[in-house]
Image 1 (cartoon, helix red, strand yellow):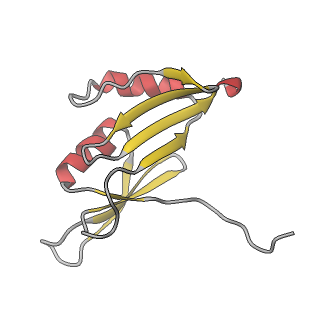
Image 2: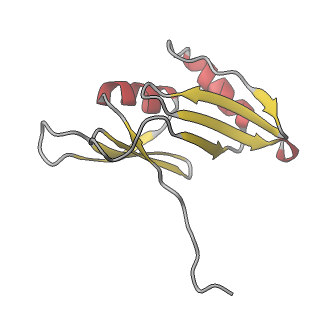
Length: 125
C-alpha cells in the first residue's frame, strides 16, 4: 500500500482581463472569489475562485499558463446547473445540455480560449 495520496487538482488558467474574467467566472458560472493577490496595485492579478469542491487559479501573469486548456469538471445535478446557466442569459455563451458516452455534458468556453466540459455520469442521475 502506498504511503502517499494525491488530493485535489487546482489548474492555473491564463486570463487577460480581470473584468471579463469576473463577468464569466463569477457572474455567469457562479464561482466565488476566495482570494486575490497582486505584487503592487497596478500589477497583474492572481486569484482563486471556487464553486463547491472545484477551485481554479486565474492568472494575468505572462508565463503562468497557456490559453486553450480543456477541463472536465464533474457535477452532481448537471440539469439544475444547466438551468442556472441558461437563466443567466449570458451574451457570449448559451451552452446546451448534451448526452455523450454515458455522460450528460454542458460545454462552454471562457473569453480567453479555455474550454469547460461540465459532466455527470448518466447512471448517477
